[in-house]
Image (cartoon, rainbow, N blue to C red; front, side, top):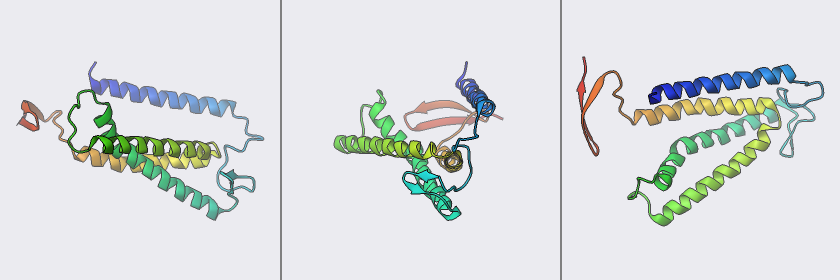
Length: 177
């Protein structure tokens, strides 16, 4: 099976799993006394020790969630792969854009800050469903732009071109008409 079909099957599996979870949560949800499936501020909504009892506070929470999620997306889609491929790629034996100590520091500092932010977001996400859902939407919206940015740095040849010769950084392609 080619990689394109594998990715499509994974996406379909992901969507089916998500739908099953949503259905199960909807069927078995007993929200009579629950505080998780609510929207907006409440007198008893306390987020990391902060009482979120007004629309202003709730909006500020969403603003900061947006900043945190935006940073998370940019770091994980742009910065982390650069570090990860330099450190963990067994075929990458020569690194020219970082010193050994610089790469060691940047990688460990990046992973530490990512883990700390993840811990903070777990606490935020379990506080109230609307906050978690807004965080997901913000992340996915920002991801549209970062993925497009990364894709714009690449060349695509599927369906239009045939690679005739490829040496290091030089690619000779032939247009198929």
